Image (cartoon, rainbow, N blue to C red; front, side):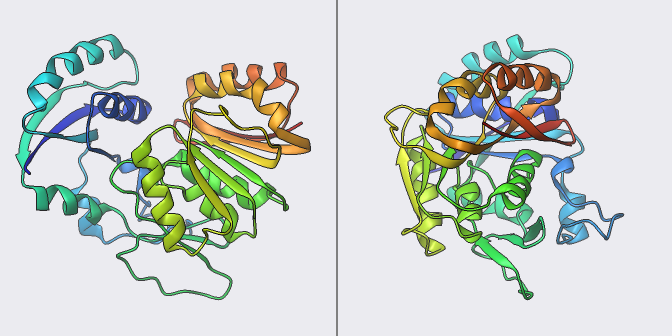
Length: 307
């Protein structure tokens, strides 16, 4: 089956919003190309495994969100897509220009992998795609992740901050990962010794990808991946919770999540665009959380808090 590649030009602030819109319109996969996600070759001390310069040079200057649709479906999508994008126009969203290109199935399934290389997050955790090699050093905790086109590689600032905060604040016990995507945050916690992890996502494709990543890392005994809508159907309490989702969802989630945390439980949340930092802070404080740390990277913010 051949596909049509739909590319939307945007900015860092709009990339996750546009990607979510494309998935809701039925894309079989999305990819965000953002130079801000790449290592800075001028900063050799950064905690990144530097990519080949040719890969960096191949990245577009503007932020692009690519999505793939079956050729029979794309014409039904373009009208609603342009209509929804017109409602998103504003500061920080870029041009929102749409371009289309036909691609062969074999190109669609392989070309995005050139941008995903092994890299280090925090002191010990290393994210490695399943098809790449890594020169393992003493103390490295390897996470082999196949993002499955759409669900998180760890290169985005929001995921990187979450992984770093998990490494810093996780001190044992069970964990809940809300909106697990590729499962990278649950796998990070398991590599740090967590057991009794429940990873939830509403998207059945994300659940499939997360399960495959968990199994590939040999962590099925530590992580249960299940399909669900946020906290729906959950009854147990956890010592640690993480949510890398959109700011409005975190605001809605903050109060009901408390009953699922043990006394002193930690909540790490990200996916928060800088302009929404105040809203999320207010929601956390109103729900009774104590904020331990606020991280900022690029246009994104993450919180570590506890009850």
